[in-house]
Length: 286
Length: 331
Image (spheres, rainbow over the protein chains, first blue to last red):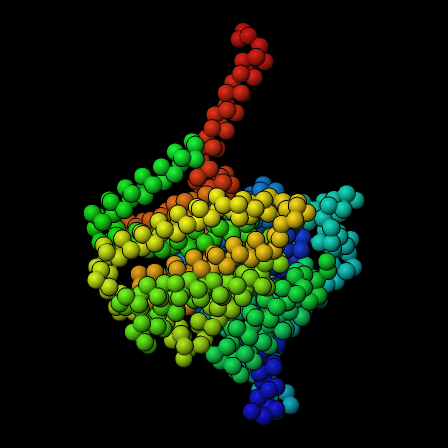
């Protein structure tokens, strides 16, 4: 195990973290604004991958599949929030249970539409090469994943920090009741954030489909990882989600490489400790 | 219905169930056995959700701890296949309770959605170990158990085994019923309704919830032993998140805080999953639909249905009266 090995493992961990950021940031924002633990978030990820496969099958364009799949799932998320979650009012437990019910429906729907085989999203030729940086062969696709996460994270951060809309969202995360009191339409904000979360998860599903594959059961595999990101980073905090995603990506990679028998334990045990000591996460606000 | 009438109804239904099932096909007997094991797991969820107000998404942890203990002892040491089965059961309950006692130190401080997430993380820890710790758990393949206990009463016969599981279910139900009717159970309900007030009244609310958590762990361990022998295979699937989710949904479906609700939920879920699935390919839509509709329209679950109907009737009567009073005479 030389330096070369460590560098490659670190790079792999960071690129996996980039993927987890896309899934986790949406989950985190939804929790921050609505206090809902969205257990159908993994289903959005899975459906993103499947819809992308259909788009690629129909048009042959991978680039087109990214926005189309993400937008389609965003619409599904939006409808779910409007038609089912909103009418329940503020009742987190029932809302959480409702999202589980939907996760089962999405699972069956995906099985009916796309079948039970393990599928994979083919990456375009441009991205399937490797580049050489300082003697390391880095798959270009993983570099693309990191760039994508940086671009999207940066864009959301700009919107959150610099626009009126973003200020309203942050106010809602901090204190929804006060935000309503000063005239912020929190109802509209939760609708937008829910759609954005679904959008990001589906985008993650398309990007991850090239390297995790797309298969039944992926939804409930990615969900706990997304939770780990959110909990370690802190709920409702974008920067926290970024750091949480990096930590989970690295912990997952090094855990599997160094302690194969304890791989997942090394991931979830820190999550328990953080929740027990500081339930709002490392970077979350009270 | 008075409390006595309710107990009598449950006892009669259970007796009828125990009498009819063994006379049906072996498919139904097996189905009923599996549902009963999950009904025991659902009871452990209901103690937390229905009485302490804690929604646990990690009950599969104690379930799988019991199941793996059984599988390891049986396959490696041939322990638990004779009279020592009666040592294995308390052993697994103890291990489930010990695991819960350890996990509870982390979990009980949290409330609401945070409790949900911390139990999820704890469940994932156990799943991670089951999935990856090959030398102990057999990894992804799990451990096969080819034999069932025989202590003069041969459990390899499906009907005998059904009676055993049925007896365990009835005993657990009775035990937990006594528990929730005891002063301890009453204080738990008080904590569910208003924890701060109970604390001000001098109750150690942390300890109450902790004890409930440990008891639920023990019951989960019991369900685990029975599941290991029912299923014949103990794999990471017993510890996976969806097992915890299923148990929670069974309770919500039947009605939290009723004990028997979880059993009704288990019966419906297994009925749909294993019976309906042989008839139609879209059975999971029915299951998902039933969940969604129950959560939307029956917050008290199916056990809340009679109350809901009474409420609706009362409302309809009131509305008729109002419209009769207010409506202008027909012209």
